[in-house]
Structure formats: structure tokens, C-alpha cells
Figure (cartoon, one colour):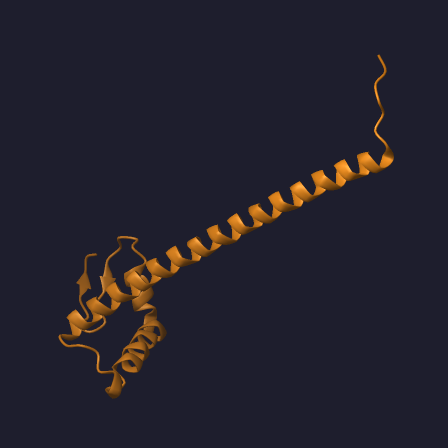
Length: 113
């Protein structure tokens, strides 16, 4: 029983066929990775937007009215936060969540977090 040997051309054709299959698989994996990265960015964007909305809602609740964009309320708020940081990092200390007492810069009293 004689086993027929494949010619070089047939073996080359097989290798090229396998190579093409692997290239297609690699392309599919690349597409899957791209889609996953896109979903991850969408999720991060959604979470950030939600966070910003919550922060804005709390700021407006404290202010007692909506921010007036024409009256530069957002810029005033930003400047206020920056001044708090310059004067003693009050905002950072309040947001650190370490449970320590923080001095109220307006009233000058100690408040427990």
C-alpha cells in the first residue's frame, strides 16, 4: 500500500489556506477587542455623566436655585472651589472621606463628618 506524497504545490496551498484562516480569526478577535473597548468607554462615559449630574443637582440644591449660565454661576462655583483649595485645601479635606473632623471655613467651627 503506497501512500501518495503531496506535491510541494499542494503543501504550499494547504499552508496558505491555514494562514488565511488564521488571518480571518485574528481579524475577528481584533474586531471583538475593538467592540469591547468601545463598550467600556461607553460605560465609563455613562458613569461620568451620571456623576456630573448628581454633583450638579446637589450644588443647585445647596444654592437653592438652578445655576444661571448667563450669570457665570459655573465659573463662580469653580473659583470658589479653587479658593477653598488655596486657603487650606478645605474641599479636598472634606472630600477625603477619612472621617476626621474638619473646620467649617465659614462658621469657624468644628463639624464631624
